[in-house]
Length: 64
Image 1 (cartoon, one colour):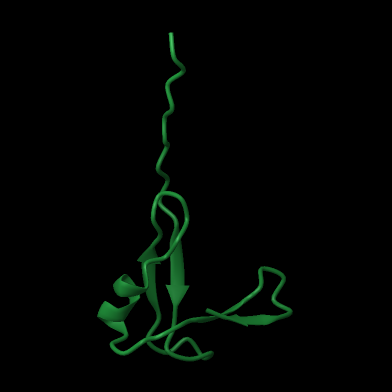
Image 2 (cartoon, helix red, strand yellow):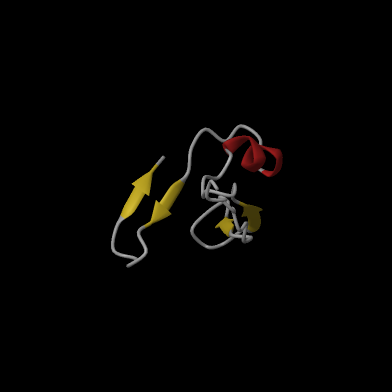
């Protein structure tokens, strides 16, 4: 009998703001395996072409 693969989708969200002060803060759901669809972000932030984020330890900024 083959093993069953069950995907337990848990809701995860990413906070996105217009600037570092938190202006225009929005929460966006990620896909079941973790990625954030930039098209979803573009609905609230028209013209967006990338994101800047801090590493979990808060020491470095990265650009996507």
